[in-house]
Length: 536
Image: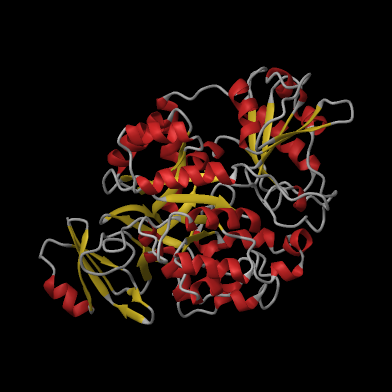
């Protein structure tokens, strides 16, 4: 199938645009003026009049959890809750509308106590007991690092009478020694989840993933680097992804694989999985590790105490020794590594691990750090010196700008979320959303990177405005830099001959409108491999 898109504002690279492009067999054959491209196109080529709309490469989200996005479409939506009562009301409404039978678990995602107008206290089991006493209720905080359970869930999970002490996680306790319902980090959360949540069969998994893929296409995502492989059952998830991606051909996936135990990672390697194995629709990406939690939950690992909670420095979910061993094994097997690190101590640990295997400032396997939030200038310089990639989420600013100084102090805040400085130092920076922690909408992400404002356009002038990036840099970090992170910069991330025809059409010229209007931009068309997979 040959296609011509003409009368367009086609973004090529900084301050360079074309009017039209020719697509042949899913690949861009030519870019140029309307006259040049139309005259060169085969007679039977499909012609699409863009009517002046802006066309950019498809967005590449370099860190999210796509499968969980699909799951959340079937959970209680708690993102809009602005009080503890809202949480209760949302849970009750979901149970009533979905007629959930007694005994079946009710999951929710998205609450954030810092948004509650009745005070910033986390929900506890007593609050969720108001949702239901006949359903196990599991409501996860927006960051994904904290879950709150009702009493029935704690009883069914076998942790009510004798809550376990968990390495890298925690059950918060009441004065009498019973858990209060707050469960921190995955090692503790999994104890509850495995005891209560039913196992999903592959048919259900396909339904969940298909919904997530459709949602991603509607927001202009053509490639995602997603962390959905985790734990012992990795082959099942890979099989579901492989089947759907090849059937639908609407999204390309670079799979981040969370294998936190050395024996499990070795088994994965023994099964023949390596970074880059696969094809244009599904490739194995990096080994994904976790070193800490989140800033909002005060589980991000810090060098110094939290300013607003002295005596607390966060939670370490992986020891330096264990991280060193996993990174070394990955390097030996030419496996890329991407490590979740938010606090400055966690980031330092990652850089220390990488420094032990990288030589002469070269990073051939393109190891990276995901999030990279709380930094000082020496840490940023180490990223550049070691050529360690930064997989950042500008959308996090919408919330974190309102709590960062309270958590870590103003001095450290001033050098954090330093996207402009990273670019200036030559660090490879790419954008993601960590969806469903935040919505996977790239437009909101661009707005936060360029304007340094929340989604209500505050503060005026931007938060730490010296770290603003311009729209060209932001789009490049969301496209060609994302492709580079997956070793695909020669075939993806630009609208140029020889590159795959993954592209997005926008209803505004984001390169020339006032920056405060970026947030009002919408995706009108998404194309993957020359095929339209979404049209507004």
